[in-house]
Image (cartoon, rainbow, N blue to C red; front, side):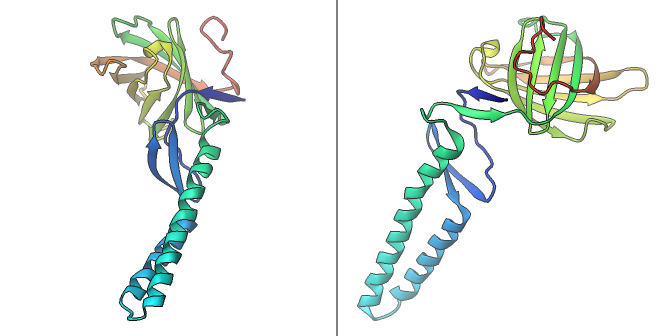
Length: 221
């Protein structure tokens, strides 16, 4: 199962180097072999510039120019094929293998989202889904540590959804395993750019058995 989103994120593609965003909806990716080929041609050009042979000089310029043209011609097509659908507006994101499910209980809440309980479903490729009495959205995360560490931190960026004004939001949760209960503290920057007050609460975690969370909601768990 895949999730189609309208967000074009920076991606990591095997054997390729992310170069730059050409415009808002296109990521330009330069194949590493092509980069080496280009630099080789430019090195040859530099060599011949110092030669008195004008004919070799002209040939070197032509070779380097041709290499650059071929490189740039292939870049856009390659990037579009890797990152977008045919309409150029959607990115397909797959769910990885399910790993952990956390159930959070907030003791201190954000006043604009007064939902005391939430569930986070983690997948091994860095995708997550969160649901609560008033939230239901997806996002990506990076973990500092491991789920079975005594303390670990997870940084979340939500994909644009109505939960956060059709924009992204950032959350950082630090989890601490305790003898009697597990606790967490949370920092967040919401869709308005506001850094809200630190929140905290308790949590439990178990194996995530949901391979496809699309239909999972607070009402249908």
